[in-house]
Image (cartoon, rainbow, N blue to C red):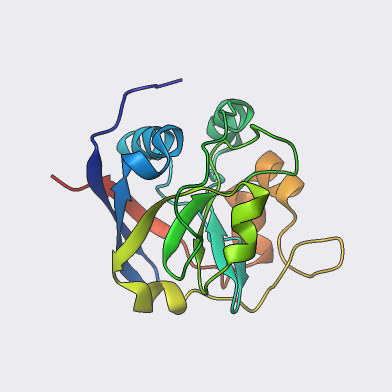
Length: 183
C-alpha cells in the first residue's frame, strides 16, 4: 500500500452528486489518519464512492470503494489509532473504526453535529470541512442504518459487491464524483 507522508496541512476537494466540499487537513491533529487520507485521495480511492451511511443529526460516512478488487486490499490494511487531539465537532472529519483498537482503514465520516461522545471512544478527527458544508448537509439520508435493524446498505455486501449492490438496491445514495488534493 502507498505510505507517503502527507504535508503538514493540505486541502482535499470532493466533487459530489450533492455539490462540492473542501476538507482542510491538519496533520498535527492525527498524523497517521492525515497520511492515510492523503494517500487515498491522491490515488483516486474515493472516486465514485457512495455515502452509504448518512444519519441525520449525527454523521455522513463513506469510504468503501465501489470496486471490490480495490476495496479488499485497502480495507484489510488497517492502521494504528491516533490519540484524540480535537473534538468531533460539526464539520470535522474522522476515520471510522470498529470497536477494536487500530481498526481504521478507508472509511471516514463527517460530523453533522457536535459529537464529543466519540472523543472518549478514540475517534480522532484529522480535518474539517471549510467549504461546502451545505453540500454535506444535502446528502441523501433516507435509507438510514444498514442491517440488522435498518434498511440501509449492509457493509458486508457493500465490501463484497461494491457499487453493483449499492446502485441497484440504493439508487438515491449520493456519491463522490472525484476527490483531489488541491495544489
